[in-house]
Image 1 (tube, one colour):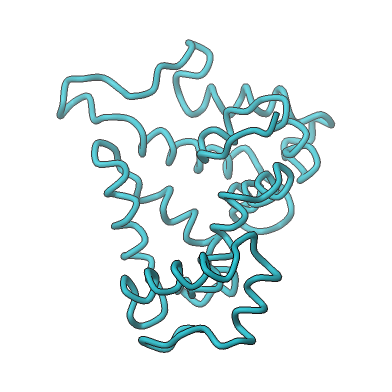
Image 2 (cartoon, rainbow, N blue to C red):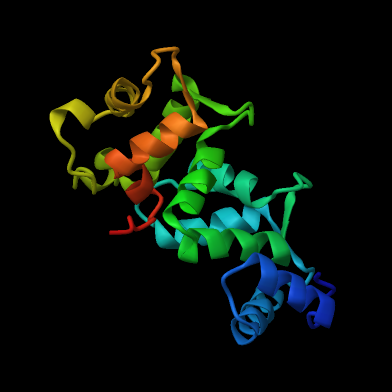
Length: 198
C-alpha cells in the first residue's frame, strides 16, 4: 500500500473503507497527500517528529512524537505506512470515545504489557509538559500550561491520576481502570487533543 506514485488498488480501497471512518474520496485525497509528502510510501520517525515540531514551535515535542510514532507503527518496522497512518488518524479523529481511549491506553502502555505503570505515565506526562511549555529560561515568558498547584509538575499530575484511577491500588492501571478513569477525568484525553463525547 504505497509504491511511489501509486494509487490505491480496489482491494486496498475496500479494506481501508472497512477499517476506517473515511469514505473513498477522503481516502484518495489522504493517500495523494501522504504520497506527496512521503514518496517512498512510508513515513520515518525523523519526518514524523519534524511535523510535530511545526505544531509546537515553542516546546520540545521530540519525546511525545516518538511515543505517538510507536503507536502508529503497528507492525514495529520503524516506518508508518499509509494504512497505519490512516487507521490511526481515523481512530483519533473520528473514532468513538472508547476507541480513542483504547488508542490512548496503547500510547501510555510503553512496554505493551497491558498495564500502565507510574513510570510509563510519567514518561508520557513529562513529554506532554515539555511539548507544550515554553522554555522559560530562553523566552522569559513562563509556560503555556496554567495548572493548579497539585498538577504543576508531571510527578504531581501522575500521582493525582493514580490516586483517582488505580482502584485496586496495585501501582498500575489496567485498560479498564484507565478507560473508566479517563471518562471521569478528561485531562489525559484532552492532552491528546481528543474531544470528549457528550
